[in-house]
Image (cartoon, rainbow, N blue to C red):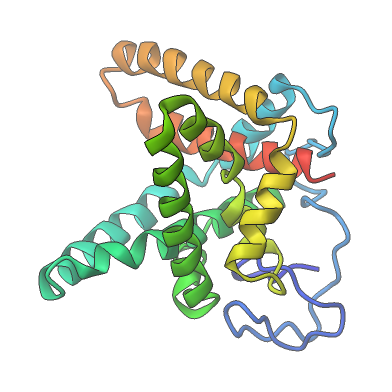
Length: 236
């Protein structure tokens, strides 16, 4: 069962969401990974192909693109203000919190729920410390691997790619456990995601040129949601 407000996974006997504090008493239990009444017919499994992931992502972001950018704009304003008053120190803290909220909204859209401003800021009142630590550790580990050479750095960057997806769905795991789980999930899948990313990069450049870059307002949420669907497919 998932919280209808922030998308956090709930324990079966939960009365309040551990993520946002929202009361879940009386909430209808949903064993579907997506809302069965939505247009998303994607059933995540390890055999899902690239076309399935993209098709589902297009359906999931429908009606949610504006809110995705509203959340981004709000975070941009908040980050700018905090950066000014903390002499840049906030830049070490806030990326993980932003990423947690972004994944929370992706989880909601995956299940057929709308992206919300509360979901985008859910990292502030849930798993705040773990989000900060996870972001810091991923950055440090990736940087150290890049010191060896570019290729090991890229490989490890993809190994850690699902850290925040794991963090958002598994409240019983700490930051380091989530990094370890991401490495396990991505074992045997790193090159496939790399190819998917290349497709979105090159096609995205062409799409941006044709649409005078306005199309990126749709393309970027589409790409990010495809990546979330990829996570859901490989964890099964």
